[in-house]
Length: 321
Image 1 (cartoon, rainbow, N blue to C red):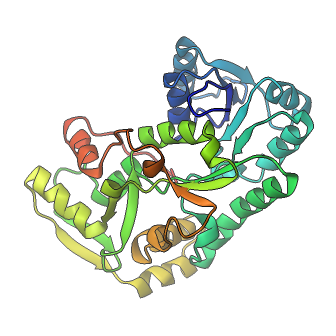
Image 2: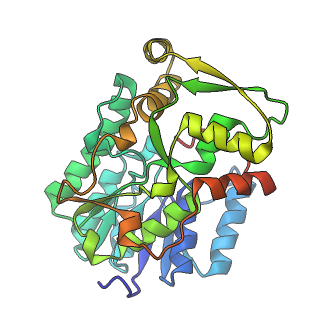
């Protein structure tokens, strides 16, 4: 399976927040692309119906079914080379059904499970986030135990989501911004469209076979304070920084109900502890950085993303993490 060759790619969760970018990237890069999606009902949202229509017009092969339909899964998986799961967190453990079907089919050259966040085997966050990540680690271990060829992806932060969350660019009269901790810890904010492209590239690259790939392009490594300053320069506005101390965030993680306790724990991991940057890439034989793999790919820098927000700001979304 050469990096320049075309392969048949099946995507689960292709209508979700990050999955739709992977579907579009797969088509853009010329791969025959399949999406396994739940059957439509009278309650299916108009936005999902529109997206499915867009997929069809792009040449995506849509297959409707449930993850419980093992025979259908095995038959479909038998027709493709690569399986990518972008299922949302509530369905992470359901990936065991995909793993079982892959084992029966016996033909898959690569499986990418639904990671696409922090590098879960290299962080030790607050308990609510730790429990969240344990389910993803369980999937990784099941893949390894089954001997399924894999690539584990650490895509870090979804940039449009976190720019909306941290800067509130749609609130034009806002004069203050919350800062988690000191605001000096570095995070990595990657444009969702670029995450889609990188993911399809690594799925079809022999160099990433049975390895972890982290998406850490140099121009997307940024602290909260740097992000706010950059936004001030681009907008000509000035914001008061209201710091939320580490101790207060820890207390909130212990007292807020689920899922808010998980969300505040994620913010602590990313923006207070700086967990996305707490390990060196290159020290371990099993981890590699995407922008070094593909130096010719012109990814969207955080500065360029803020320019997009100035011209045509992406709408805020709920619960991307």
